[in-house]
Length: 542
Image (cartoon, rainbow, N blue to C red; front, side, top):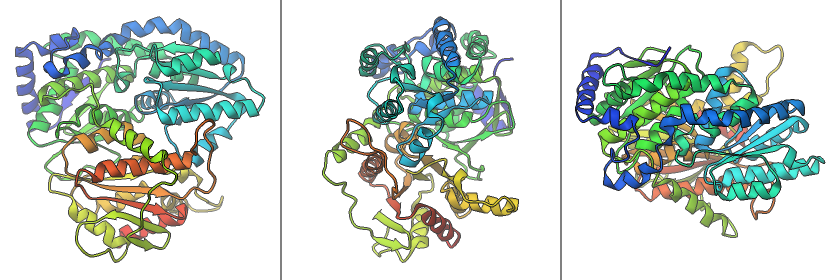
């Protein structure tokens, strides 16, 4: 079985057919399949020349299988059944989908939240193997996780060289660090960008250690690969033409629906691929994950084995390759380079500058509503009366073609720690979980606006939709959520803790967003549990 793209709505089908016809007449489908770097214009050619290795990964990644197999055998022999992945963006999202789909456990650390990292550290450290995955080797979050785990292993009398595996590009600083420390290193293809690396060492190593048959993943991708050079029956061309043509016609909000299929969580991976690849030069497609489709004219609903304007079905390995091909096609249609990320470094640089300061410049709140402090500037000349007023004014500020982005720099697993009694009813437990989960805020506000609302966990989203927020159409309204840290985690060898890094990342991104003239507000929870409850109560009052 290969990937199928089925149109369930007449207009997208007609637009896609017209766009695909133009692409075929220009020979773009064949040129892309062959790795032609000129397809995105002269300014993108140098970057594209170094970023098209993903097209051949179904074949070239097989060379890694023997080495990966030895790692798996060693881990099993040592009884290491708790696999932890330290990686961000493309280094974490694909393995997360792969293992969730295969229903095997993987602890993913793509966070700087002290509580989430501390919980992972306290979970079976004696049976833990850590995969440190970073293409550049200098990702601050991943470097911090490595340092923290090295110290934890040493404190437990465990040699880190027996527990840490590194995946990185050849010649990266992380490769040299790993060699000096005696860590096993698996080198990824340097001609593959992070968000296109699902079928590379970055996707395969942690997934195989967790128990996935990664050769089957490559087999499924290889099965669809010949179709990508065809003019007819080319799912990547059909999908890319549909997405690109819809965006040109104004339907640039991509609502991703995850159906009851064998694939689990693919929209989160698609979100990064599409947002970071297309959101630049004031253009782009904004993926919306985990939200109910609205009635906005600028939405295009795509279902993963579910109903939508179009449906995409097929096995995971094949879907990875088809979505990557489709995204490259969209870049050609929109006239942008789908392989660079020119605005991602901005927030990183802001964070680094803030960490060098003796104290983080949080400023003074414009409002304190119980356990919630409000920072930033709201539309209008008057100070907000309460938190409900803050929400109302933010929603009113969303343009007719815009969106609201909620970005929570908190523990994304905290909802599962909500207190509940064994004899509590299902409704009572659901209420308790919802009250502990800031993602619920999106649903509360969504019923009060016709515009799309996205939700992202920080700093995870900085390696995904963060590029779109800053490089795409400047029609977003931004709501950050940060929280007080009760028990911080030191980063060995660095002058900051995880809690300080987490807040600096939020402040750095806030500066980058506010500098574009868009409404940007930060809500700081002085008590996390009480603060989330207050947010949800205030949202119901809007």
